[in-house]
Image 1 (tube, helix red, strand yellow):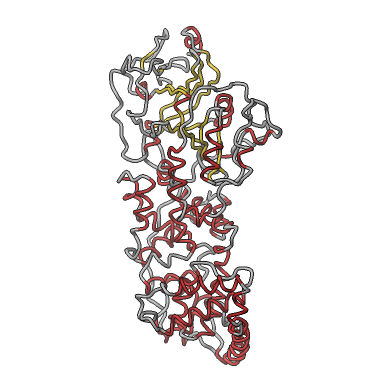
Image 2 (cartoon, helix red, strand yellow):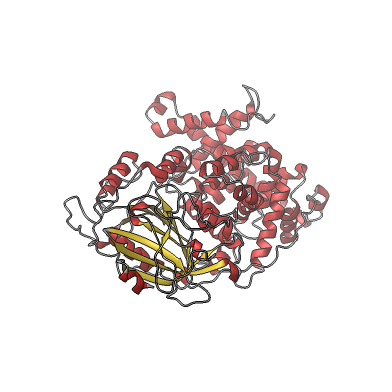
Length: 618
């Protein structure tokens, strides 16, 4: 008990019950897999320990096993039996014996026996050995904390069934600096209060802006408290703002930084640092239970819509009839290749579903004139003018470079003098005139190429491309807010569909799902064979069954690869490598079938959280 610890020379600074270990890899824990315990922060001999011990079922809350690290650093005593449980699933929920300090037992008057199967899970760790703390995602379950040591392994995840994560983090902040990144607000890097190494390393890596070194620590080098209490808790204030660069050009640098570029020193901790602001809201996930989904329904894809079936929907004056039924058929089966050239103009908003044949002809004439007026704007720029127009020159150079390597294995674009390449180039340069603010961004050529391949007309392909860009232009905006939001929505869906997979990815520093960035940016263009991309896109363009089917497509791919990822023991680099190696190996029909099944499984849940309903368009 706490009293027994005080007698043994330990000063209990913090104590919280209702903190469980989950010893099963199943989505929903059965009572036998939960071990109730108490978490404490204790001081002894100029060291501060974080300690968890179980509560024996047959006893009361004072009957606990205490395990402490030998202060000399040696293995002065060893438990009789190391736990052998290994779910083969989630390192956060299993004991990693190479990381956990060897334990020896105090002798409180009514302590648990060392051979107790629950007692063997007890652990304690010096705060100086902590490297990072990861907090669970808000909104779907009780909170848990994952403690990662400087040795690189995770201690058993601590599940706070009755709340208390914020209180514990506040106590730890008396002894440590907890630096939280706005890019991943759940990850706290742990540093002693002498944080010059932290700010110097951030500056060297240019991960934060030039003023960030002023808010890394709440206390400056002379020990003077800084102005502004908001700097004392969550810092630095802004992380690298460009996920595209983060994912591709700086991914390894950021990953290596979080893995161990900084080695904080345990000396010099000052317990007098003020606690975090009192008005910080308690996370809402402390009291919300898991969502239980029903069984996943079976889904069968339909055959593609044929030219004959399309013709049956054409009424008087060429107006399409029963459009909602037609869209539903396209969603469930796609289109015959020979029908795409006409149907895509409707799916991409170039032609109105309600218009007559004559109205469509008049619309095309107007749009043709508009296109060539815009094309003339850049065509009429002389070389002398372009030398003084760095923006246009930059767009032209970038487009030429990207076009020269876009789908060159496709017969429509192969060969050095292929006219298809010239059309790609002209359409993209004209789009820069159409949308001055956005211009051209790398990846747009990937989106245009299939459209031009199908439409095979410069003007019609341009306006169809504009329709597609209306849907995805946010992906290419400099702020990257749209991409950040989509990755957040994807994580939200995945957290409801498969919490253990999310926990596994969290444990491998892949919880941000940055490896899905390319999927969402260019709508899986480089993940599937070219004909499959055509089928995938026409299904997504129907807008059925909701506005974010592409996120469920991503969930479906991850669901298909779930066992491979979780059972192979992949780290973050291996996860990224495995995802990249899926390119051209996926079946679009299998993925679409699973994505629709996931949608039906989610929408059948009566207790689906409101934010998930919003993502699904319910």
